[in-house]
Amino acid sequence: MTSNPISSRIHGPILLVSAVFLVVVMPWLNSCGLIADFTLNLWGKYLCYGIMAVAIDLLWGFTGLLCLGQALFFSLGGYMMGMHLMLMIGKLGQYKSDLPDFMVFLGHTTLPGFWQAFHSFPFALAMVFLVPGLLALVFGYLAFRSRIKGVYFSILTQALTYGAALLFFRNDLLMGGNNGFTDFRTLLGSDLRIASTQRILYICTALLLVAVVAGCKWLTNSRFGLIQRAIRDSENRVLFSGYATANFKLFIFVTSAMIAATAGALYVPQVGIINPSEMTPEKSLEAVVWVALGGRGSLYGPVLGAVSVNALKSWASRAYPDLWLIILGGSFVLVVMFMPNGIIGIPAQFAAWAARRRNRDATTAAAPANRVTDP
Image 1 (spheres, one colour):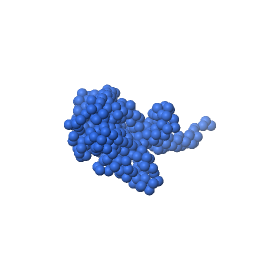
Image 2 (image 1 turned 45 degrees about the vertical axis):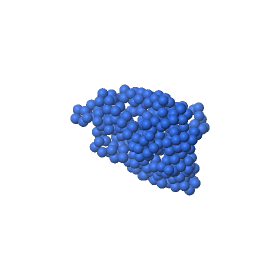
Image 3 (image 1 turned 30 degrees about the horizontal axis):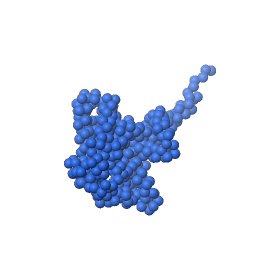
Image 4 (image 1 turned 90 degrees about the vertical axis):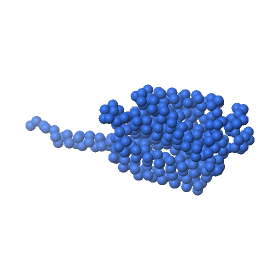
């Protein structure tokens, strides 16, 4: 997928305006009462999904690795932050105990050792990066050193996600079981139930999205990005050129996992819940659809796809709850058939169509002048 100069000229100003609107204008409108708190909170959720979509695109669109396990890394980041938030509830919970409510319900009287350090916010923040990052490092090392790629890599990542979801559904893991974590109260001493705290979390999410897109844009435009796309297009040629492609893919896989995890860490305090259903294979498949609809290999398209699909889902779930999956599937089929570059590629697609039309008209007009007639 090569960049289109017309598309770049169109996208640049639009992206700058979009960033200012998301980071500055929307919070200001919310503080003025022109945007409801619920709406801002909903958009915070959309932007978290947008960050995860960029992480998928970094793997799939630029490296050719279709990962069906990004929801696992997203959820692990959420769980690491959720553990800290659960401990901050204290005696404000239903059972008036220093232990999280689900532990009291299961009959526990002391806090498990691996929970102790999560009283510290810096430790929890470090775990947001380390736990998903280490899992991606171990899994990616084994997969890439074994030369696993293509559909087999996708199946393995899906199996990893499914296995982790089954594990987190178990109560004896002491991670909330089927219900997960919820009823959060405070973060860094701020009440999560008040509008100003949620506004700050939204701003942090919007800033992170802008930083992730800018960082990934820089990376993909660098010499590293050229090798990355070469691996996507023909890994064997890159290997014959002397590059260790496994190391490149491992770096991208771990980076993508940590990006998705940070999105999950911001998702949890804004949505107010995290449970194993967020890491099921269906969630990863849905995220892949966001990227495909928005435009794979563009970085901006996945954000547009994630926001558009989830906004459509919020509307369809209220208006036509029984038809949502049909709407999503129909949209995916239409994009695959008629918009191969996704929503973000529509301007370039129209420009190319107009250019072909002009060339055809010019050829038709010149034909009579070039025709040779017999005397």
